[in-house]
Amino acid sequence: MAATDSDRAEVVARGCARPIKTVSGVWVRCGSRVKSRCESCAELYRGDWAAIARSGVFDGPVEEYRFYLLTLTAPSFGRVHRVPREHGARVQRCGCGVTHSADDAGLRGVPLEPSTYDYAAQVAWNRDTGLLWDRTRRRVRDRWESAEYFVVREWQDRGVLHLHALVRIARAEAPDADVLREAARSAVAWSKVDGAVVEWGQQADCEAFRANGDGARTIWYLSKALNYVMKDVVEDGESAHPAVWAHIARLDRAAREMRCSRDCKPGCRSRVHDRLGARSHVVSASRRTSRRSGWSFTGLTRTVQRRLRREWFEAHAAETSPMPSEPVTTVPEALDGIAERARGEMVARGAAVP
Ligand SMILES: [Zn+2]
Ligand SMILES: [Zn+2]
Ligand SMILES: [Zn+2]
Image 1: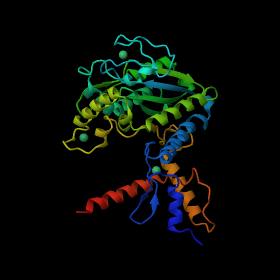
Image 2: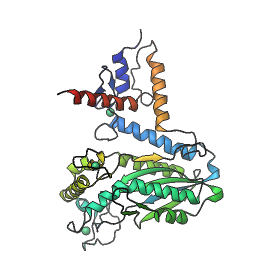
Image 3: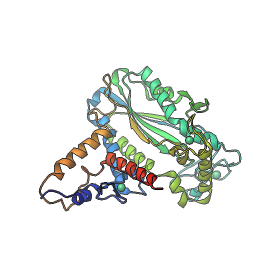
């Protein structure tokens, strides 16, 4: 007996908190990246990217490369309270005159002076950070031709993005970590929306490591960062302390009033306005071209991962044996492309209703 559509749907959508029924009656995964909406789909997304991150560190001739963990931050848009994350952590006295402990979490990242804080500049920086990274990686490649990278953008408490990049450079031309850090940190871009100068903040960090040394620690760090970026900062604000919530609300307003592009008009529906200015790509990696290996030594990308899952699923859907009773944890679980298309179909149908 061949697998029926409902058997198939059960396998495809298994574990998904909010499966979607398509017009053809097939259930597909929601494909969410936000853990609070669907843990299963968000976990799959994180796992895919973690595999890509790993394949650029461990799946090649690692002894021929030097690796770096580069962190770049946003500039200051006004002073904020400095509150430690852990109890007993040693911290400097805050600009408000108090030495905060972890108990003051309700002030973490909150401006000292909301009346003078530059909310508009901060959301514009979030908007233009992709452009700034583009200039930064070109600058790095101009000096070190072999540079490949894997990047995670993470939210800081003050509601601004910062960036962690794994960088791989051939040993023959590999610079000191400090030299790479300064080359990256001093990159400059000009906003395509308003022409303003876009720069990194003074705080930057770069550590060199060997993949046969502390590579595992670095991957652990990146997995942690991947977990971070899937939280939706605006949604999380609902359960936050009042001062934090007020800060996020002001940023949210600034992001709605901001122009997301040169063609942005009032009533614009771009997601950039919902995400404190940020675009949706939180993780990226350099791609393989005819001249370059790209970040992954094996050419692993999310497109390849999706294709492999689809092939696995199609091969198994044709089997005559009963569906497995145990949850299938990795192979058929995403089919994100199908979920994406399904959502498109649903929107199209909704719009057709008078
Ligand atoms: Zn889901
Ligand atoms: Zn303070
Ligand atoms: Zn817009």
